[in-house]
Length: 280
Length: 283
Ligand SMILES: Nc1ncnc2c1ncn2[C@@H]1O[C@H](COP(=O)(O)OP(=O)(O)OP(=O)(O)O)[C@@H](O)[C@H]1O
Ligand SMILES: [Mg+2]
Image 1 (cartoon, each protein chain N blue to C red):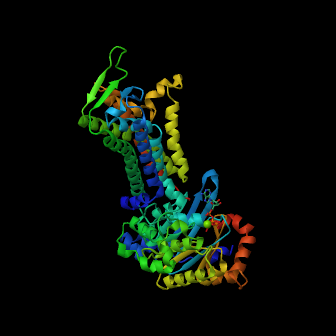
Image 2: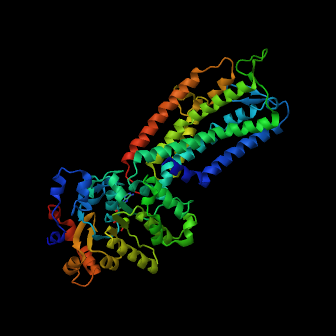
Image 3: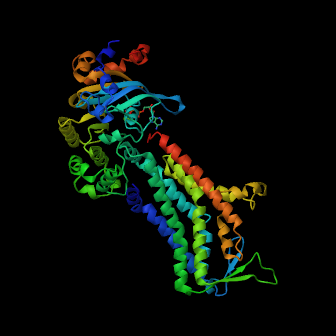
């Protein structure tokens, strides 16, 4: 069943256009960063890390990751998850897939597996493209990172990661971001099981991302208590991986949060889909 | 009311059901109905009762037409037969086995309900292949070639489905229904929008399948067609079966012996009483 689903989705224009757009974005970013002045410092995230583009290939993937994780990647993930079941309902092929006696659980599972695979591929694609561009442009060198939050006006907290180390950290950061998409994935997938309109499910995933952005202390000081529980809020904490020592408590909390969100919404999707009247 | 007397009331196969043989044996027992619907009710959201106590029994080799005004519950009834919609009340059996979502017995049924539905960016052929692979049954059981012959799509078979015309889509839908050489065909208005030549072709295809023992249940608004192709007919109105039985019997009883259409008009136009008859459900 998974192979059938792969055959449907891999040939789909929407799939490769999404991947193409993400690749183009990562490359455009690489070009833009390379074109700026040689000594220019890139500030990544709120922590903040200060990177000098010219000195390492790893600057590009780090900037690419942090500039896509709060909107473009959630959007891509929402597209894959939101289209999964609702897209089939909209085509009218859902009833034929199910009317032949195919197990609904198995069908749901194959949909979730392929959508998840594509979502992970989308997350991985961004830093990989940027890192490849960085390797071509700057070569295999160590990554010097100035930790803005640990620095004082008199002392610059500078850490240097050798290339192998930096690559390992980048891998962990990518895995963290991918895991950080799972709540949005599960929510969009749930909507996809409920609605027969893919746009509703996709918009729901994007909506949850935006909600998570808006219900933020930075904008609304009153909601500080919610801050640790928003599904997409702490997706940027991977930046701690490039500090020394690594501050991991926030990341662990976020990963547990993702697991809870996704287990809840995937279970709801399953529960609903097994009982759903296929009217369309 | 005399309506009830027309219902085909063959003895329910209680003996077979009570028999302690395995399900498979029950379902293949001679005379076991291919379709059996008992007191089927579907209440939709907002309290609309779309199907309101339908009873129907279809035996092997019979060809049933399902007629009735728009919105009378034909499509919903067929969807409940296919395990797509959960009945609010009542039971559905296919080949003696209860139907529920994903029931294995559905593998013996081919359907075209509520229009065809395919993946738009794939070709017709790829769509049929994938649809069959979803059943996880061996490829040689699919009977793809004969199904494709019935669809008569020619070169178009290799074009993306999104480029198909309305009639081509229906023919592909019909081909999909034939995959796996089903013993029961459920067709929901299979001829809507087909050109006369293809209607004739479809009729011939059906006749051929019926000759080979396929049981058919098809809804249609084309009553001339029903009269010609079907052995039996059920007329639905407001979620109920207001008359059912052999086509000639219904024509004789309600159509003054002339046509099924006459009978239908008589039943549906002059049936305020029949639809509201409280005694109807007390079979
Ligand atoms: N998806 C749906 N949402 C809400 N109501 C529905 C839905 N599908 C069907 N209905 C309602 O159920 C009732 C029966 O519909 P159904 O589609 O079974 O009719 P039908 O007999 O097939 O009509 P037609 O001849 O027009 O195809 C109608 O009143 C319709 O409004
Ligand atoms: Mg209908």
